[in-house]
Length: 286
Image (tube, rainbow, N blue to C red; front, side, top):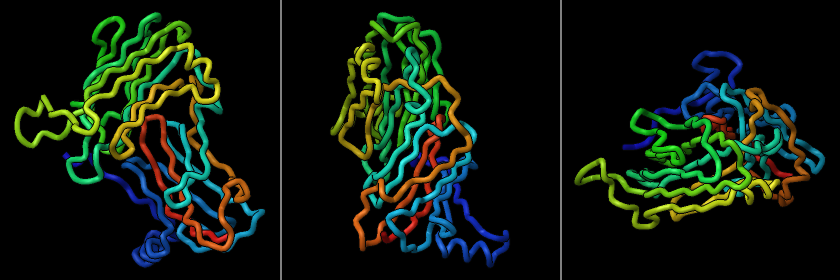
């Protein structure tokens, strides 16, 4: 009902005792995950996330990520504004034959926020050679081969993302159709037939495989729906292994930060299995 399977808070402390962990929590030297034992950090020199820092135009912030499923996307936010992003699929090279259908978001921010997806993805002009699901939280959510051309999907997202990867015989000349009904939480009636979401009762996409191939930069089509980050995406992905250990530096000069005011910078990242991690903010004044 609440769509939460339990998250974890990570604390960067010098020692694992009550006093030191308490000091680290009060200093906001923390990160959070969707339940996995992954790791994320953000710092400027020897000043860590959670701290209030003065910076110069030539400074760079450092990040480090450790995971087990491979990192596919990193985003740096200044409050609610996206200021920097890495797409590891694009960096490693998008496949000519493998695509992914990704469903994400919620209907509302309040209780009973789940979006109940029911439908499928149909591919014509190419054979579906392999189907691999990602992000489904329990056995009632999943996908299956309905017939030679259609993969059926039934799942619920409460702000998270669920996905299905399809390996096709070819993408050139293929036609990809997505038909999904979107329901709401059933308070009264049959739980197997949720009532339609009044703000977005369905999601329909009709995509040309040649158009995905021609879009070398993104290789993605996203249909944004009314709701809280509620969207459907069909995208090309890489066939290369995604990195489990990722580190880098971000020049502050590239972020367009207004001088003389404080900027709460935090990093969030997503793995291939759609698990996520967030750092505390680094409160930085350039």
